[in-house]
Length: 132
Image (cartoon, rainbow, N blue to C red; front, side):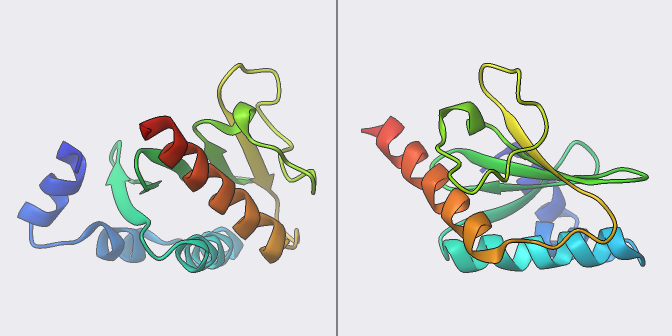
């Protein structure tokens, strides 16, 4: 586990509880909460973490993605997104990079639950294959 995960736990708070406490009381909090649930459903071995003073992160054999909230978007950044197939076309941000890809959710956007879970599973499988 990263130092940030351990730091949160030393304070008596798990990363999940820190994220729960920070969640925003508007559409961004609702969107991030829904995405967190889908990530956990996609792979029960994913570990939720807390880094960079408040950014939720998810790991399985390495970093899968981060969840960032901004004024007008919730951004899910896949650390190895450029290496993932995205048949549903979820990636709509950071498309020019060599490593990362992101999905920006705006107020009123729906979440394609099956496509997001498939992308999470593909990211986990990529991390596992990179370990071999």
